[in-house]
Image (cartoon, rainbow, N blue to C red; front, side, top):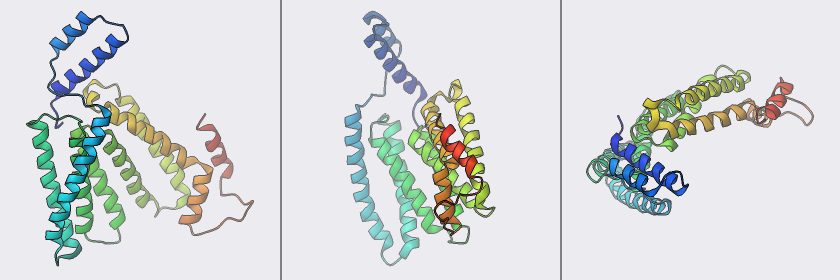
Length: 269
């Protein structure tokens, strides 16, 4: 399921933990060296500044290569041809990503992250261009994005993609709930956000999900944010005016205004 080697991921995490314990004076140097000898590492930890540099360099290189390939696919073929070209780029970038992980043993170095984001983006955009633009097009787009982002975040243990998957899920549910009526949407989104928060929070300390702990923590953060925004008076008022194509005069309140005033004040506390 995970693209990276689990034993090497654990070894790197334990060595980093031992390093922090040693820096805090909790263990002495012989103990730290004993831990290091017990957990030899294959993966190297990359400094944040180096990660950013490698990420930007890889992203620019892939975009330049993608431009040349899309010129070939898009010549006379229109939107559909570009879509197929993007899907082709997805397979190329995923093949390169898997090769670098399995053969070159890169791990969260910036290179693999850039390739991951590039491949996910090309697949989502490519499928959006290929699928039929029917009346349910927007809901289908959010659903496709949710599936692709969820699978990618699980396989590559990427917290950012987990957050993007959660936002895509909210977008999909919005497209479904908008037909029901705007008045139930704030409460529906609060209920959904609350449910996802408690589910992710309970799973954080699950040993079997330890490799996705950061993913779950990020989802907890976003679900709390969406829970607050769904019950925020200003957000509900402005969204209601836009979606229902109405304008409330100064001094006039939305229905159940006192409830949303209370949510706005109490939830942050």
